[in-house]
Structures are given as C-alpha cells and as structure tokens.
Length: 309
Ligand code: ZN
Image 1 (tube, rainbow, N blue to C red):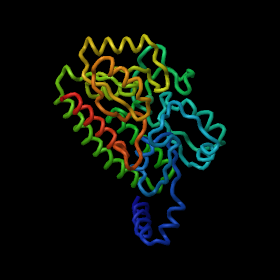
Image 2: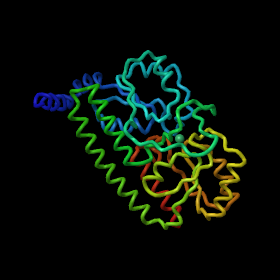
Image 3: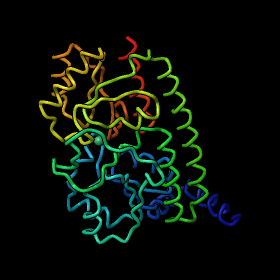
Image 4: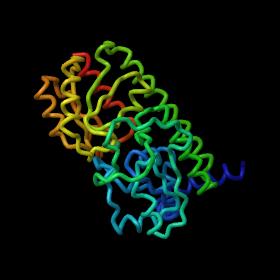
C-alpha cells in the first residue's frame, strides 16, 4: 500500500514536467461511456488518470441512437466501457459484439432499485420499434442518491482496470459523492419551498420519474419513456384535460425532445412554458448543463421559478 502511494506521488510529481506529462497521457486509461452524463461522472472519478469519451454526446438522444462504424472502433480501443443499463442502450450489445472488444462492459446502475416504466403503448426505444428490454424505466440518473451508486460502480470499475490508481479513484469518488450530498440537500430544500399544490408538472417524455420519486414531485409526460415515441391523439387529449382539471401551472421543454407538442399543449390549455429541463444529455461547455451537477441545479431552479411565480 505504501509502495502504491509512493508510486502515485511520484507519478503526480513527474506529471508536472511537460515531457513526462506527454508520456503519462499516452498511458491514460481509455474509458468509453455510452452517453454524456456517464462520461461526466467518469471524468470526476477518473481525474487525469483516464481519457473519457462518450458515444452519445451533448444534447443528443440516447434512446434512438444508431451507432456508426467509428463507434465500433471507439469500443474496440476502450479498456473499459460504462453503460447505464436498464434497457437504455438497446443498441449496445450488438455494437460491442461487432467491435470484437474484450473490454468489460460495466453497468453503472447495478444495485439500483429500478422503477417500472409508466404509460401504455409507447415503451419503444430507438426508431419507434420496440425491443424486448423489459419494462424498467432507464432514467435512474435523475435521482441524486442513485447517482451515488453510479459513482461507486464507476470507482470499482476503474480500480479493477487500473489497480495502481485505486487510491486516487477512491479519493476522487469520495470528494464527488460529498458534492452530490450537497446537491441533494439543495434539491430537497428547493422542493420544500414549493407550494404543495404546485408540485405537479408536465414534461415531454417520461424522463423524470426517479426525480419525482426521490423528491416528491409528480411528473406527467405526453410521450412514454422514449422521446421519439409518437403520442396518440388520445394521449394528448388526456394531458389537456388533466392540465385543465388539476390547474397545472406549467409545461416544460427538454433538450432532447421536439418542442412542438408541448407548445401546442400550452397554447390549448393556457399553461405557461416553464422553461427547458435537461433530461437525457448534458449540454456543450457553453450551455446551461455542461456537467451533471449543473444539470440537476439548472432543472431545480427552472422548476422552482416556474412553480412559485
Ligand atoms: Zn429518455
């Protein structure tokens, strides 16, 4: 252990000289995350020992993703692949197989109690056709306590692939989990300040059930769990009548969904557009949600502003 620590300190010191830093970057552990949110978590745990990339990038929809030949190459080059699981990446098994990769595919939601997917017909993932992924709701990252489980799984996966970095990954994971605890309290405090009758909102696709279950808000979605599933006229009529009956004050747009349906529902009911929520992807560096913590913070501020005014 002492030897390991000494090696880590030595590596850190030698990394400070430019030539050594270059040498060092060539040895970084290549980690491939399936989408932007997991990539951010890996970056926080891996620090400068890892080189992280994401298959599905900023503002992109992971449900309907079509992997390219370049993606198969990325999988082949990765030492560790980290996926969400719970049926989110229906395209993943075939991609890993076609890449010929021997890298472990780690499921970041391992140990999380899944919620059942809600809604009727629209459980399809990817291009509107339904695969048999079971009926779990994949959006577990919308609950901050769940993301602490993601972080622990990522920490263990990185340590298994790079045992020399174990103590670094442990330290980084603990620090990041402490930030998540702060974030979790922030969300709870914000929800506590909302009037009880206003804790009910409409979103485009069913991405916020874990957030709702963790923090006591009710999210009603016009689509099912996938943003590309088309709602029927009956679904739309149901939402419109629910908004009117329950006097729901606001509907919200999302960064991965088409805005037209929400705008139509708002116009028909007089509910206001409460702003944009970030569901399944981070934004680019200049957006509102370049990191997971920014994403949750943006969402709770947007919800608070719309539901208290
Ligand atoms: Zn989604």
